[in-house]
Image (cartoon, rainbow, N blue to C red):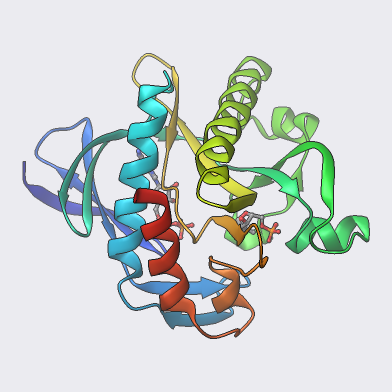
Amino acid sequence: MNKTDVLYEGKAKIVYNTDEADKLIVYFKDDATAGNGEKKGTIQDKGIINNKMSEFFFKLFKDNGIATHYLETLNEREMLVKKLDMIALEVIVRNIAAGSLAKRLGYEEGTVLKTPVLEYCYKNDALGDPLLNRYHIMVLDVASVYELDQIEHIAFSVNHIMKDLLRAKNVDLVDFKLEFGRDENKNIILADEISPDNCRFWDMTTKEKLDKDRFRRDMGGVEEAYKEILTRITA
Ligand code: ADP
Ligand code: TMP
């Protein structure tokens, strides 16, 4: 398996084409951004941690019957994945109010939600990734209702699986963001990454943040938090 050209370089990863047309190599960088790219920095060894955590969760999801793009871990920063036709949505699931939801609803951060909340954002940097509902998604032709039904089913299953695992590690799963794509048969497949960049993890007892909010909010202890949550999850 050899890299050919760069298909896409994003804020956190570089995606390479390979000599097999249906496979990509994802390289996890240490670069970190927040606020739609306004704040930039690096988190030492983040790429290594996010690659390891994504491998761990993608394998766990596979064991639970959820199809993901994960094929193989190539080295500490690179993962071989199935090439997908990506759906331009960020699918967010929330169990506890934090971040933009706490602001939107006027809830104090940490308020446990009566029911998990699923939100869609349009993956469109120029528009600032706006919140969308199902009607917007249909008008934009981003995904069909049938596809959204599958996406929601998978997203809530992922929430269930992750919450169960994390409870045993004394960690609250506050919220997380998923991305999906279509394979050659138009099946909906879970893609991208599962890491402290796109999940909020809080220690259940102390409520200490073990995720990218430490970077977003200049709280310090960013590298330590990434290491700690990886160790807890994979131990
Ligand atoms: P961003 O685009 O938000 O800056 P990244 O730096 O994480 O994000 O770049 C990774 C890109 O690769 C994202 O645009 C993501 O949608 C895309 N991607 C993730 N998994 C796959 C896949 N299996 N096939 C094709 N593209 C993918
Ligand atoms: P938010 O509270 O800022 O909307 O974020 C909700 C969750 O989604 C949080 O775990 C961080 C994640 N997220 C991303 O991964 N990428 C993004 O661009 C945004 C806005 C949030």
